[in-house]
Length: 346
Image (cartoon, rainbow, N blue to C red; front, top):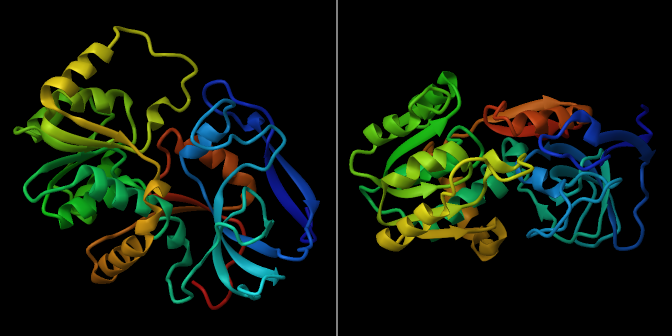
């Protein structure tokens, strides 16, 4: 593999159930030359996110799937190498939907410039990017936290869950996190300031959660599903709100789970308790991006929000790391460092 080539990772085949390395293919292509109205971007940091698993499937969803043989989808922090667009210049740092590769062409659509004073620039993929805005908009618009309310969030050490809980604390809520492993739970409680964190690997999650929420749950921020949702459902109070941004426990499922049909129980709870369930995609609230950036930047400066990244070097490791991410192997926002950042950046 030479520096004169563009390494890319393609979707080689559609997975059935859990993805495997065979579903991906690393190839070389020529570095493209930007034409009129285009710019060439060099990828520095590539974001890995759970939604990518859904893009590997065929069939209708809220976004077009990646076709077999195409570059895997993803957003990245990039440096502008060459620009034939008047609003961009060489050396600028941007966030763009480049896919899993080392170089990409862009016409500027959907590209966001990054404040060069931002440290580290990788935060534009996390706490100051899509995951942070997912937490901010979902919690404030749908969760509507009020002082004294009880909020539960799973994947509490991850890119979204960690921010959800910290914003809820800022808004005066009592916050219970759920995470995988003693180390993650200790981080969530001691570093992020949650009131408690439960390890979902330990037995009797439902009983432990009930003990932690003796007056029930007013907001459950859903990004996992599975056993965590089953533990939370009986605890939801009247008029509880459930923002739904992800179901990572089900992304690798190839069929419905065995066991009794729980839909009647769920629907009865929604009716009797007047619950609000609302699914959302972060860009439903795109108009709130300036508010999000202002508030989150301020909370970071004040030390009221803390954030952790899990960075792996090398584009070739992206398939392995996505597979691990879907199993909860990451600790913090998962990022692939594809190339070195410019010297003026951290």
